[in-house]
Image 1 (cartoon, rainbow, N blue to C red):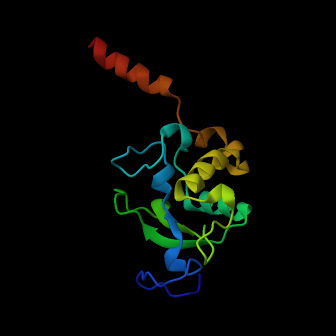
Image 2: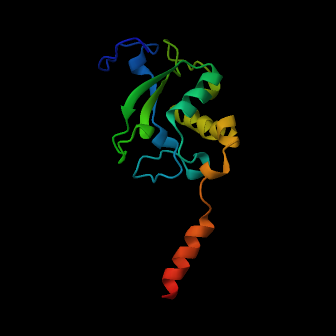
Image 3: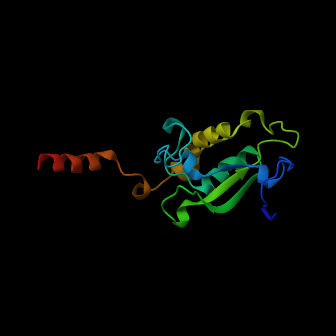
Length: 147
């Protein structure tokens, strides 16, 4: 996005970047709680999504997408991995949805949650990068209980 983003104004058209919908990765992160910023049920969410994955999924839909180097205010970690905000245009200037299946922010986020696990980068993870199984953590908890 080469355009300069200014403050919000009700006279702005839906095609202006300021009127596009913002999506942070925390909104669809199944590891987050509602208090930490998750906006969907865990069943619709993905484990630790990145802004690149969200961008890739949305670009495939044909929607106009922009990436901003912003950090979610509720994010505790300031690492670069957690940076990134996606902006998506979901409405035409007359207020009608660009695509009928993406008429609201929630419908866009649910689609992202369904599509990220289907990405090739998610399916072909090496064994050392896959999330740890819960068996190891339950064993350590069991040992503490026996002491």
